[in-house]
Image (cartoon, rainbow, N blue to C red):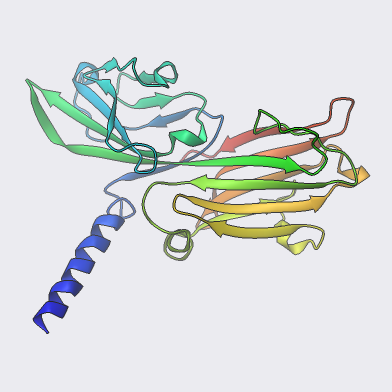
Length: 258
């Protein structure tokens, strides 16, 4: 009986550690790829810029944390140092976010070689859309561009990249996070029989795909992958179909910052 109680207690401790970020101790930021994002350092000191270290960790991409900024100085050995900047309030700016930027970021403050307070952690969740089309004669090098034409089938895959260790089911049931494909009027495309909408997931992504056969009247039509939390739009990616001599799908994104 004692062993069972010990196991139950251990389970509660693990669950509590996973939910720490959701409960408000850590920050969660949702952003679409291609946008710029600002990650706040909630434990910043006054005149903190030269005292700040930002580290990045992603369990699926790195075996250990990577120092992006050390005491206010950017680490030029990191592959994305040109897209990073440190603000006077010690927040971290990331330009032109990619799906590979998802993960946890920690802000640490130092004075006289001693850490001050605890790390302030921010989880960055990135929404990204990858199109494909049966009419493409060759694969496109850009995730926002693919050859299309009327009468062909096109599939748009909307993916939310996350490194919290929590399942998509948890995000939906407990945090009210939902991925939707909607039209220009904001109507859920699941209500239209011409669209096939499928949801899936893996270790680090929640995925929702849209598949449809293109019609002549789809020229200039917009579809939007929308991420909501408790029915409030957090970020979205818009795709507009264009038929022309050079046929492509154009991508733009918008995030409603809270």
